[in-house]
Image (cartoon, rainbow, N blue to C red):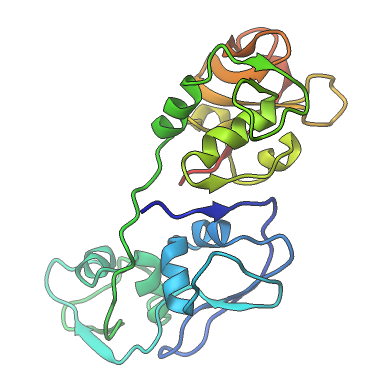
Length: 255
């Protein structure tokens, strides 16, 4: 079953690392969302929910969340050929979790045979999530090619869109809830260089050169976006000329 995550702009907070038998924690700040906290800490929202006994992805400022396993009571003796990554896979946890549990290891590659390290005493696997891909986003978007343009279009309508209602719609169909406005959507994920853009990333533009993001589209390839524009409705646009000089940034929502 696909989990739904509400994403808003911004991420701020602090990491607190306790003893070897404890867990790394994160203090929620205003504007934080579970998806982004998980992304920044190399884990999943489902895993954070499990570690904290949460039944929904809703969080509140001041809440302290565990972002790594706790109750470390087991030890593991390093064998020939072991690396921290191999050990993490053996115990079904992320590399960052193993590193957190072993602050005495300052260099990942400096393991030696016979070394004793901390590992989770037990690891309950989080419910399997089908990871949404950029292709999923584009497949949803393609269904609406030919739809008209209407500024301020309701997000419940699929016959007409404006640029941000279109983006919101296609992500929502894949279980990811974005803000409604272009500026907020552009700030909802992780900024990546244009040279590293992937299909389904959000490309934002300042069409009036006034410092305000007023258009967003979906990255298809280095010269193409799919968006809802006032001139064409939902359609592909070549970014070589008009759009190129107006581009502000590329935002990645899907890890």
